[in-house]
Image (cartoon, rainbow, N blue to C red; front, side, top):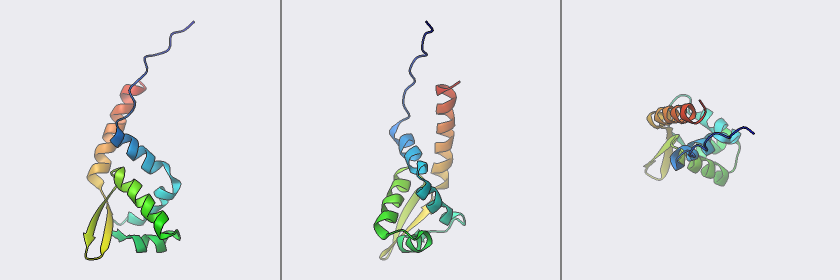
Length: 103
């Protein structure tokens, strides 16, 4: 009987939030709205996606929690923008995790 390898530690919560955020095809499509790097409001993303306001808001919350987007309030509007530094840092952490987890 072969021996199973030692069970690796699960990713930390921040990395799990990132993976959860990008696992949704809808959230992946919403991220395409930010290819130009500009900030977008919920209303702009509702028009872009064709989804309801509450659905878009829920997806934006997941993307924000996962470190993919930041939000900034300007007057009554909240603008979401890609958080490139956070995304790059998290991808490095994910790469390190996978290298140590699955050599």
